[in-house]
Amino acid sequence: MESLKQILFDDSLFFMRQALLLGILASIPFGTIGSLVVARRITYLAAAIAHAVLAGIGFSLYAQSAWQWTWLHPLVGALVTGIMAALLVGWVSLRFKAQEDTLIGAIWSVGMAIGLLFIFKTPQYIDPMSYLFGDILMISSVDSALVALLALVVVIATIILYRPLVALCFDEEFASLRGVRTTPLYLLTLCLTAVTIVLLVSIVGIVLVIALLTLPAAIASLFSKKLWQMMIGGSVICMILTALGTCLSYAWDLPTGPFIILIAGASYLITLVLRSRIN
Image (cartoon, rainbow, N blue to C red; front, side, top):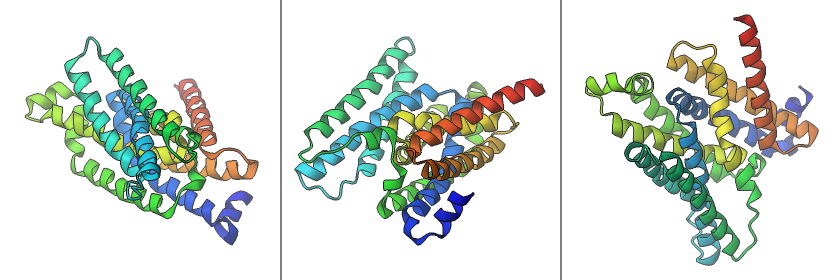
């Protein structure tokens, strides 16, 4: 509680307030899209997209330094690469069921390899750790504005397409019979997942991104009967975990992203155990 009071009222901790606000704001699309990922059981597809995003980040950093493309922000590069990876992963999962695991694993590893090679060849030194494991305290005002814009896009798209998305998650065959174009909707879901992953990379990094995308939604699913309840619950839980992790990591001088994930994982395990004992 004392740490939260310091963050909110100490003028020297403006960067902490910005990090806390960003985490709370981003929790809304995390809980929303995370619920779709958990309900649709596409966590491994989302993981492949997350790791492929590093290719876009690496290229953006290289272009900024080597070619002076200052307009190419790493979040923009990550967004473009994420959407391309989402479409590629979706196409593979639809067309190559027999080799799906192998091909998606290849996309996963090749994307990371390309990104690391670009970072290595960047003329100025770039520490890849902040992109692999996140650093919410280093978020700039430009990052915050981009995150807010992308979050708004994700939430509006989900609200507009809510009914078809419910059908896709729980009864794809029935949805197809009712005239819902399930393939484009499935690819759009992956693209929304890619956008959400780009938001998460700034907070917890590429390696830990899937945990924060899925664990709050998984906790909410234990107490929800409808998808919208899971989305709202996942968003609120993500807000609490992000705020708690940010405050405690500051108080105990620990890296913020990994500590948020540690709290999320512990919360899920505790909730799972308590739920099983109650039932």
